[in-house]
Image (cartoon, rainbow, N blue to C red):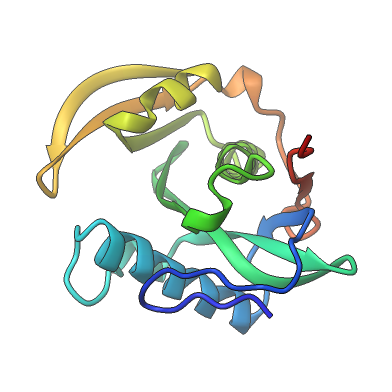
Length: 185
């Protein structure tokens, strides 16, 4: 059983090799995503006190990455939310991946791809995000452009925009995407 506690410890007697990234569709998935966000943004990074939820959570689409056991989703290990701020303009935010999975299976990258592709299917003409500066290079490799630098919650961020041509529309966000762990040699 995978466990995420307040110290961000990962314990398991097995290592997952398959991950399902999709739109959250069950209560346990949403609850897991919120717990992961609190662990990453409140405990690990200290950006928020107590909880990171805001009014965007009321009308967003929540995407989750889950480790799978025997092909079945078991634990939320990543999340991101998307929302339409004005007609055609979508934003991604609160991208979080459990520390134990940041180097496995391209979890963050796959969450980003699903986020932009899902918004694209919903009529997005412009997809934006405020990205922590240390993650800017990863986004640039994924066909994002840096528009400006800014500080949010006392941390350096980049305002970035995705090239929608690199993200075909995803019309089935509940089936989502599957990715696998990197092969260990």
